[in-house]
Image (cartoon, rainbow, N blue to C red):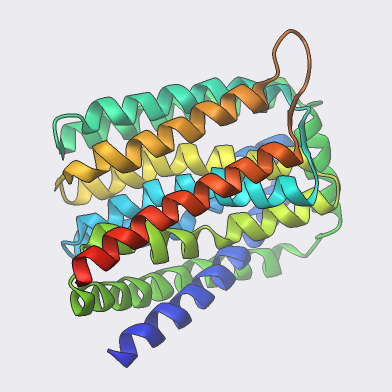
Length: 326
């Protein structure tokens, strides 16, 4: 049992470190090949920070632990909005200047609705998986087209300044990219092995472990990057990380896991987790989009409410764990 705890702690630490190397190397490599800063910010950094979720969920699904795969993806979405944006907004209110991000907020809401519809029958088949991956591919194509057509967006300007401070030779960029990728795989295997061991010891389902320990752990890269970006005044990068990560989790992470191993969906996912994720996504759309011409803004009061909702949801899960243990 002790080794399960060691594997989780060490796996999470290595996962966070390797994810940072992977994203940094990928962004620097893309810059060397002339990729526009807006695309680097939205696609590579925003989606790249979801690499831990993708690795963990894919490995969990391949090893027959669908609860960890699904709980990791949806738990990370909840953590991204309620925990990460809550903490970030308390540090500094988040103003949404980017027109691209305002267009992606309603898309994220629609994608969440799509996921709920596909989960409604209590199972995720390979057909459902390919629907998710097809929508994800379409959104990626749309995002790239928008980024190439609109190079002067505020998110692109913020990303340009960020990349200039991290200039590095191409060889070093590629080395960090490959090192991060290899260590992501190793740390994901450690984390899944340890999480399954803990779940079996306490007699709780894989889903609870996926929603708590694994989801919060794999969300740490987004928390670190969002807090650092906001402290530098780069608000659009902070929100872009969360929007990109949640789109990636909902469509690509769940889609890849279900394509590897079709899975049954526990009833509590539809009665507890999806409603919480949906409510948080709608609230983010309302407070972050900005209506009647005003810019969206997540102030400290709203950040506090998001953080309180995360505490309430986590308390709900802990109560479920204690009930199972007893």
